[in-house]
Image (cartoon, rainbow, N blue to C red):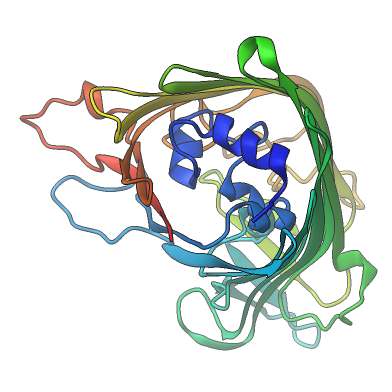
Length: 437
């Protein structure tokens, strides 16, 4: 199968230790896949399913930092899927892929924890936990023609009539739909480019909206170029992205661009990247957050924004790196990586008709009871060590069985600092796997 000669060679170089990446590999080796060519990129550019024919991918789930010592708990949000390809001759192929139960966090992050509804006739306010989407399906179609690969992707997550506490509630509703496409093509033997873009629709609460309501539609696009650098046995990787996201009562615009580099070395791989961003978020007074981070959206059926909009403006960048190397045996790899984000922020609190600021708006950076009662400028950074994918550092390992079955794990960051005689919570925070056939 003649599939994008340069792209395939890029995968071989980028994945010289582990030909396929997983979320666990990404999480423990730099926290993001912006500058890595890997199978996780199929969710950013569906054309890339042609680069990974005939393999299964999935996760056992994640174990968050709330895991208690001595108590068993099933991992959260496991998912699985596969890619299947058919050679149609002449170096061309067709591919189909499906993934079940995956959460698309880039859409889910706009969902509130609870939804309040207002009865305009009697003034009664009801509160329900936001429904948990249950359809959660990714579908892919792709084709490879000589040095070009194209792909289409649909994502659907939906729930209606059952709230997040499993109570029957006619007002409970949540929906996320995404349609996107992409292309990956070889410019020359030393250059390969990826282009992708799409649209999404996010809705929650009982208010009746037409499907083509422009206030609920979002758009996004991204591009990256892999340029071979023989001197380092790697690539120079410029990237760019744009996201204009809209949801009931809030929106976000994010423009990013950066430059990365990767290099292969004996039994290992290294990458480094710097990505700058311009980000503006707005939320109405009907979006609130308490001092524990619990978010609530008020759906009054009339006004999606409330009295006025709170705005959070940011300009900054993220530097990140990752490294992995086989040690002891060819089938065992150790990984480590990290990231650091610094941005300058300008916060303007929305005010009601009396001029009182919305101190508990969802965009307020303060966790204090008083919230944000005035405007201000400050610096923002990612969490140092909260055990999530957004914090500073990661550590993990991988097992490669005959270049077929590959299992990756993210190690809990506090593991090596624990007292073994006192017990502890989680040992591993994420386990992912792929199988090539």
